[in-house]
Length: 200
Ligand SMILES: [Zn+2]
Image (cartoon, rainbow, N blue to C red; front, side, top):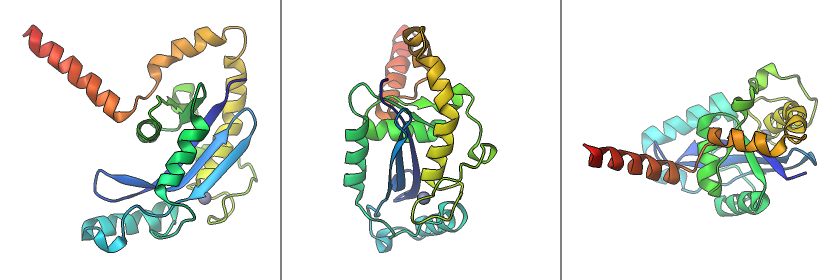
């Protein structure tokens, strides 16, 4: 079976619009292998504007609980692991449009949104009793590892159905739902708008 990955990230901000990875999980659905990384920041805390510091403190305290400076590897290595693992013909899935676009832009590959397949919220999926990462407590719902394990368990039977006799037809049919890298999306929007202007 083709490699199919579920990728999840937790993020913090450098500016309002520029974000970086704090936690990254790459889960191979058919083989059930996973890689999980806590990632060092790409900018020093003292270089951030006060409103961005406040935003990051809020996200750490209320969402993923990962301290700004906590991490094992740097951003470049994390992105390299992601690109190398998912390169070639493998398919990538993530949950939610924003995460799909963030991951698509990092990898340069379009990403399937799990929500296209009807994937429920992580809190509505059964507890797996699988280990969280070393930073998060068991079954912590903002841990990328827990999310990937729960999404992966839910998605496996869906994937099995997709790879039956009508495999090619199904993936081609679903391709229109893929989320493109942001630069490609912007480029296509521009091209479309320019086309409209010329018509007028
Ligand atoms: Zn975690």
